[in-house]
Length: 360
Ligand SMILES: Cc1cc2nc3c(=O)[nH]c(=O)nc-3n(C[C@H](O)[C@H](O)[C@H](O)COP(=O)(O)OP(=O)(O)OC[C@H]3O[C@@H](n4cnc5c(N)ncnc54)[C@H](O)[C@@H]3O)c2cc1C
Image 1 (tube, helix red, strand yellow):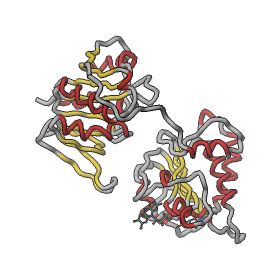
Image 2 (cartoon, rainbow, N blue to C red):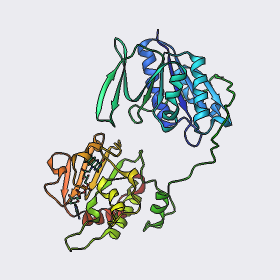
Image 3 (cartoon, rainbow, N blue to C red):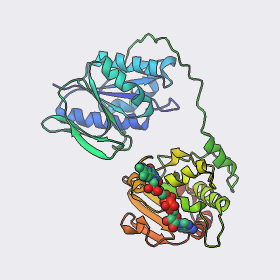
Image 4 (tube, protein in one colour):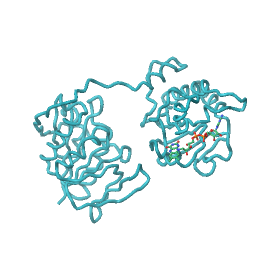
């Protein structure tokens, strides 16, 4: 008989469970129901009393390792906490979010529990056997995996399941006392990436609000291609104007900012660059594979190594001056064959005057 443990952690502010953790709760709850088995949920946090009531309707056994030492993400404390919860629950299946916090420790926890682990899991089936659908090789190959050995740890990719939400009510939480291990790392706090500051500082709106350029929760992904810094029909480069148009759009729309590889590579080749872009913004085969509902590519050719990073973007649009670009060859839903400088200028003025901020 299988027994299911969902491991969860608090979000960055410590006030609630992280979004990925709540997705894992959805999966663990469904799996336990399908198998007709018991569900246990473990919480690693500074204070589980505030976090646990949102799990009341799961009717799960709730275990917690809490305290100041367990509030911050840190390998030694997170691994010790997860290990203690696993020893108390004795699960055969462990489901957790593939967050940076848990991805860092869960292979070690699986090892300590004499189990095995699957990462980048997107679905868990429970027909004859439990199986995990997962990605390999930077999300280029998908496989369905079954294993006999237990406990089996399954780390779920973010955004693959609904976030659990249920009635908030008083619950009983079993606190597990864990002697904090010797720490070599002391977490002093969070530092916001510099690129957010640049984005704020150069905003023509003069807004004091800092925008992260990579915003997984944004409705729209805006991708800048190398064309923004190439010679334009007047024979000149307009990278300064390009940067201003892009930043204006990001502030007005709240979009997440992606880039082609060519554009972020240009800095190291001495070509004109958009200073707020780094390789962290790169989308594609050797970049990221974001999951936004909509994407708008601008001044980008739409070559396969770039577009492969768009596989989870539901609606794709592109603005390219080249009627034969890759987007027009079936890779986008809508292509505007037009000068992106002109289109973005018009779009920015429409956003400025016509679209209320709350609907963007
Ligand atoms: C192994 C390997 C891995 C790779 N991985 C990645 C990856 O992860 N991500 C990635 O992006 N690339 C990757 N590449 C590179 C990829 O093949 C392309 O070279 C790259 O995506 C091209 O970037 P681009 O479209 O921005 O630039 P370009 O090919 O230079 O295209 C610029 C486009 O802008 C258009 N343009 C110019 N001015 C305007 C204007 N005013 N208005 C509208 N359009 C305009 C031009 O017509 C042109 O189509 C990889 C390549 C290899 C070999």
